[in-house]
Length: 246
Image 1 (tube, rainbow, N blue to C red):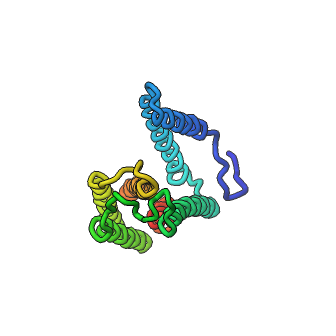
Image 2: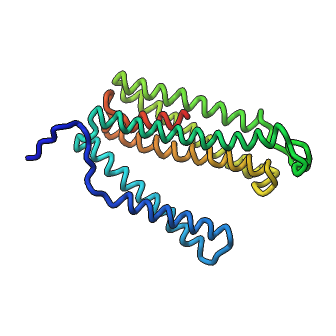
Image 3: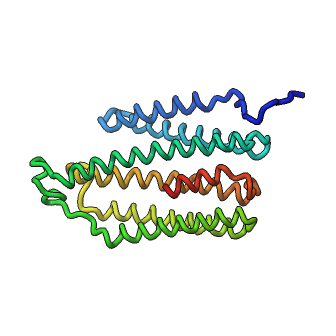
């Protein structure tokens, strides 16, 4: 019997960091090659994405087993995991800050190349008080419902927590569908100068953020329904909520 004299988790050797590195490398290189029309690049891009998703799923499976069944996620470990999630979210905040910086740099002082106008001539922007406003309401509502779910879990109301999380995921699904429809109806593309690039780059990455957050919350719902989460041990769910509300 091995006695561990400290509350920290010394991780066992795992193949997933190496697997994730190769999968992401394949995805990145094949993505760039597909942009340049290299033959069969799409096939390697598909394999890279499948490899990345598979590695993520298996890695998360191991993390769930370590925290739920093996008891490795003690209080100090949970604090470390929460800090890691917060630092990751901070990096995302600065990523989106750079996107806003690019937008305001072009919008507040349009250069001659942009026709000294914003939006540039010939581009009809999406009216902000129609679908964008509806999506904003959906996101704010989802933040309220996921907060309700979290507080219900802390209070020991498991059914209320599940219901709040299901409502949140429904809002997320509707949001994603509306954004896809918005893209379909847009009268410009990402190649239409700085305006198109800023619009699709910012909303596209935000849409990816929502999709990843939806997967994060779906995993939390699965764990909640299978009694993995308790009112004092749900650091993964708290991380999903922090990610969602950022």
